[in-house]
Image (cartoon, rainbow, N blue to C red; front, side, top):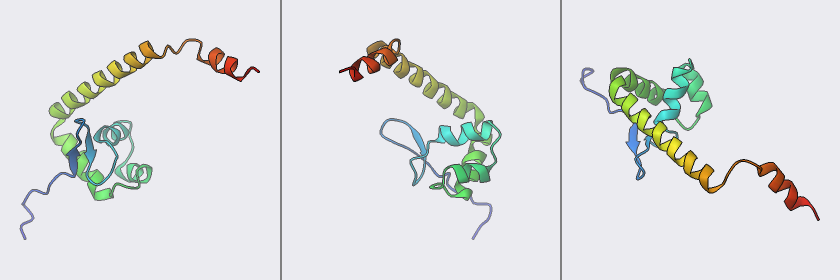
Length: 107
């Protein structure tokens, strides 16, 4: 066994192009966002119990070693989220939601 050998990063991309922690539905974005907000790997593991602590450490190590690439990916995800949000708000205007819901309850 060689300790110098690289271990695989437990990340995989789904059909939609979203990177998730292998074996879990937890997104790469979620782990990195929690880490950037100051959460420790142990706190992240308690927040996402389907992800093993060593995998969280490996994901964070990958992030710290590949910040430029990761930031490009995260920027793309933020742009896509903004596009989807704008499309949903165009299709389902948020203004007057309460009034429409209340009107449905009236006999």
